Length: 89
Image 1 (tube, rainbow, N blue to C red):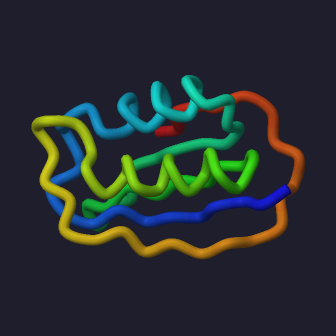
Image 2 (cartoon, helix red, strand yellow; image 1 turned 180 degrees about the horizontal axis):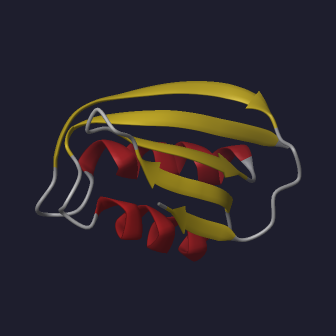
């Protein structure tokens, strides 16, 4: 099973982006976490099937209505067997 590690750049904090990510992950059955980073980006890890992760990655590039996504840096890794999807502080 693959694991997606991504960092989302742009106006992505204070606009509900983490909760958008959590909802989308829950909708397609992905496990992982999402958090704000001090420099203003949002970082996330998601594990699941490759087709679901690819659709999820596309949605990250759009974000919720109030966000402005400039770019998404992503890497594919080996899954670690995470369960559930959480918003971290």
